[in-house]
Length: 335
Length: 261
Picture 1 (cartoon, chains in turn blue, cyan):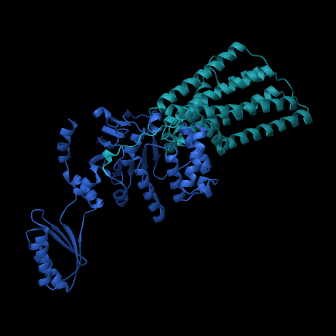
Picture 2 (cartoon, rainbow over the protein chains, first blue to last red; picture 1 turned 180 degrees about the vertical axis):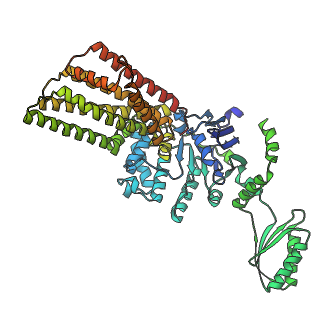
């Protein structure tokens, strides 16, 4: 029964944000985040990722459309809804002169947690994020890694149902980044999460859903598997070795094949794009034969694109190429 | 794992006190204001000016033998220190919310606090600190001048004078916090606020007698400090400025609760 289904964690409908009638930051965004989902928010700079997160948190009010969190409308005074959210902004900053203990105590009080609830919790969190030796030092002296760990602790102090982390691995070194990703994986087992990141490999590793934004418009929303399913198939890279004349000759012959869409040579690496109409094994066999006939050695062959990064880039590229066609596809949805 | 089939286990919301967020911001802002260099600079300027001027007049009074009445000299001192106080107090008030704009405000407002609570806590904290500090400084100056110079001050007069000044400052603080909350930065906010405040005082000085002016208010203050005042009139003035402060705070509460941060 629909009534028994758990409420969506986040649901937006035609969410639009226009700043001072000058900048369209978000355009007609309708998404739903189910309980337990770990949604990766992808998009180039200025795509509207942070604006979306701020609307979900009620820090901004929508120009049009609406945003529900845990089945209720989010607005700037919806403190009870924010009590169930843990948020980390990009490059988190903290009030000056505070120590981690003072800061977490402050955040606990902002959530309305009683002394009995917040004191043991903050002690546990400081230990968990390995800030025990620095717990009495001013936050202003912290390194980016320590700041990130404190931000994680502050987002977990209220035991939230939904975590919204805006670029949590930004500015972290390799070790800290690895630790952060492992933490996300652990938390993902029991909480819903929305992660914004520029780093597609991070999204690939920890998320099970993705939303791709481009210039304020949602161009994809679904599971990560669906996103990967949209990649261009039959895209290969071949590293070649041999006489340059022979390589050039074989590339000319490969280009002439009707099953080959494009064949570009770049520093002895042949980039091949094949049609989807025929089986790739047959075409690849023909290409290998051509290379063999021209005495060209194949060093390596690689299938390009079975990655989130390629799928994402393809989506953005296709969106850019659609031009005015976007309008016509958008019309029935809006209706 | 399919996300749709693994709903989040319902977590028990920890017991919370709805007033705690207000008091958290209130307490933190009290501490921030006391520690801010702007606030300390204002206090230092007032103390240095009051002590320097007082000692100078004390020297004239005792050594040269020229009688210096405490009420007269307090009025003269306030003419200078009052302008400085207005400038500093408005700056500290405007900075209350605009100074936290950005990720610091994000990290507070994204928690379990409503905009109204946040604004009210900031407004009340700044009002409390600035007014209490001004009242203590004024009481100290009046007491010192009373004993150092010709003692013509009365307790009732001083209390009435401080009450009026505090009411005026309460209005300045309330509107300062509101302007800071509604503007997009401290510089823009304080520029606007100073233009209105000092521009208004300047314009008032050109108006005829029934309208209040800076010089007129200082003259009235001197007689008030001596104990010559109409209690009803003083109550009305205090009431009007308290109302202006309340309206300022109300406008800020409503405006800020809808504003993007």
